[in-house]
Image 1: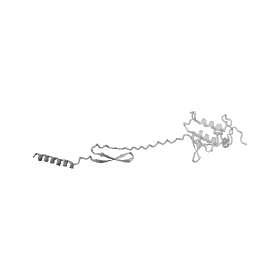
Image 2: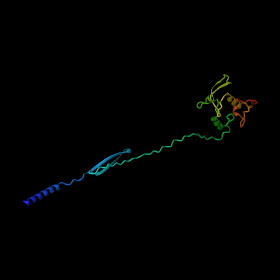
Image 3: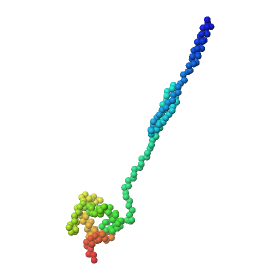
Image 4: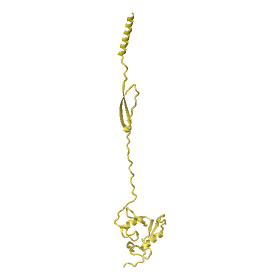
Length: 201
C-alpha cells in the first residue's frame, strides 16, 4: 500500500510539474510611445520612445526655440544746413549799393523790404508793409507797416527806420550815404538822379 501511495504522490507531482511547465512565465510587454510636440515657429518634432511597461514612462520633450533678431535701423539723419555753391564771394552786404548777383543772393536772405515779389507771378506782395496805397498821379505812396517787427537787437521797426534807409540811398548829402564804391548805380537808374547831385547833362 505504501508503494502505491508513494506512486500516487509522485504521479500528482509530475502532473503539477507538467501543468506549471506548460504555463510560461509572464514576459514584460514593450509599448511604443509616440509624442508630437509643437514648438515655436510652427515646427513639429516627433520622438519615438521605446520603454518597458513595468517601468514608469518618462516623458521626453525636446523644445526647439528659434529667435529671429532684427537689427533696429538707424534713424535717418536730419539735414539742418543747406550748402549752396556760389560762383564767388559777395562784394558787399549793403543792398543799397550792390550791383552783383552774388551779393544780392545773400542780402535777399538777410534783409526784408516793404514788399517782395510773389514767387509764382512776380507781382509785388506784402512783406514789412502789410498794405499800401498810391495817389492818382503815382507820386505819393503810403505804406502801412506790419506790427511787431523787431531788429536783431530787439528794437522795433517804425516809419523812421524806413525813411532813414530810403534817404541813405537817394540823398547824396546824407552822412549815411556811404559805401565801398559810393556809386549807388541802381538808385540813379531807378530815380534818374540822386538828391544833391547836379542834373545829368
